[in-house]
Image (cartoon, rainbow, N blue to C red):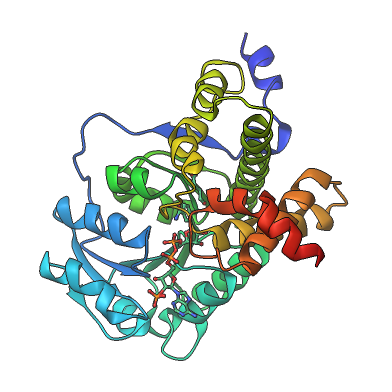
Length: 326
Ligand SMILES: NC(=O)C1=CN([C@@H]2O[C@H](COP(=O)(O)OP(=O)(O)OC[C@H]3O[C@@H](n4cnc5c(N)ncnc54)[C@H](OP(=O)(O)O)[C@@H]3O)[C@@H](O)[C@H]2O)C=CC1
Ligand SMILES: O=CCCC(=O)O
């Protein structure tokens, strides 16, 4: 029985991966007593808030200080640099926009590396490529500290609800140490082995998601042009084999040309770009993701970077198609 089951698991995941569902009880077992959080944006803010609500001693930093104010008023401590946060905490989380900002905050002037030491840990939950993650890991580990990459699946609402999915890789000791913190912020966590595997898993998942949203956008607009009721189309899609929460959650507002930001379009395009780089590195053809990436680039060029990624549908509307060809 086991050999049949085990042989159905991809070989590279078989020995190093495991998924642990969130235990029902939320008890914290020996958590790090002082936790840092760098990057208080759409995701970082609710994640740090959930730690605070669970009674964790949280110290925060954000490039734009004003975004820290609501959490400070709820009891978070504040330090004026990543270095000072890392120096004052046992474990520091980072939720930054992209590879460059993740690198700057970890390794730049007054970066977290300067405050790290043996006995401390750094958990990067930003979505970056494997090479960036390995670079940050190398700098952190050169101080004697431990490193875990832990990008998340799930958006603003799951972050608020403590329902994220952590895709972790790196130091298993640190994974074990922060497990109870991940359980506060998420509903499940995967440990995937060496640094780079968490980033790769995240990029593959978001590559699929970006293409799905682009395809959904085409379907909505085609349906509308041939006279179908878009609300009924969303219902039909939501009940069949291609049903995905994303369609029923985003569809109704897309029909009204509204894109309240949960996952910024610029970050989805960044993830497609990084996923295409990953595919290139192993000569894997990804023509659908490449076409989707072009669409997100068009949307960005029309000022939609900070809208939700569902705004990619705008890039398919005739006003934008015409301006592209004129
Ligand atoms: N939103 C979502 O649904 C999800 C996002 N992600 C990923 O999580 C990460 C954060 O996303 P999200 O919270 O949505 O994004 P936001 O744009 O809301 O937050 C980005 C954060 O990065 C900081 N930042 C950006 N550039 C720099 C820089 N040069 N130096 C220092 N700090 C910088 C921002 O600081 P400042 O406030 O000063 O601009 C902010 O704290 C991204 O990697 C994204 O791909 C993953 C899962 C879901
Ligand atoms: O990186 C963003 C992912 C958003 C989601 O998983 O819903």
